[in-house]
Amino acid sequence: MAKGIDISDMKIPNHIAIILDGNGRWAKKKHLPRNAGHRQGAKAVEQITEDAHRMGVKYLTVYAFSTENWNRPDKEVNALMNLLRDYLKDCINKADENKMRVRCIGDRTRLDEDIRERITELEEHSKNNTGITFIIALNYGSRDEIDRAVKKIGADCANGKLNADDITEDTISDYLDTADIPDPDLLIRTSGEERLSNFLLWQLAYAEFYFTDVLWPDFDKEELKKAIAAYNDRDRRYGGVGE
Image 1 (cartoon, rainbow, N blue to C red):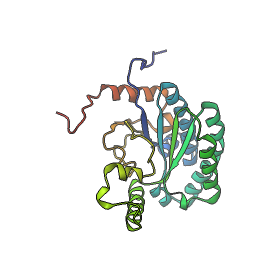
Image 2: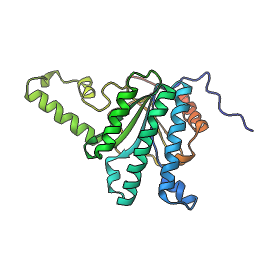
Image 3: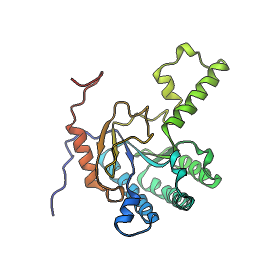
Image 4: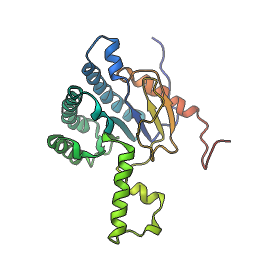
């Protein structure tokens, strides 16, 4: 059996963000319904969260359901919502096992009430855990997030809570869904696509990007190690454009 990548001497990214792409293509390749790909993708999320925690990653954000995903066929959206219900329920046990703190970002208002309740229960249940912080982006779109933040800033300026002349980049960050979460160091996108798809546009300003042809359900610990190794191979320069 081939030896895996040794990352013991590598710098581990503090925060990794992942665009989970390729569930449908994975199912198609195996002549399975798309929902089978989504179920396998959910299992991959569980395993990668555990693997990332053991590797020393402190924050992991996954793009689970975007604001654009509502445009998919109703049957697929309903199946995804039911899968989400099951996942959120099981996630409480996973949080206890791994001391995992769970956060959800995105606009919850369009989600069904029972899903919103499960999210609140999960966040409250895990808020004092000291392991990896697992962030789930649900009904999330970065432009929507920024739009909501700008409206809150405008309202606070109008009622005197905030002075427009005092607004800085830090102020804007404080109004985003990720207010108390450090920006990602590394973005991973699976399935060969090389775009951000409206994901963490503000927060990824200085992140390293890693794209792989591997479909999300096949992304495992060794693939995560490859991404971390590639991150370590980058010549990181701060303060502007590379020389």
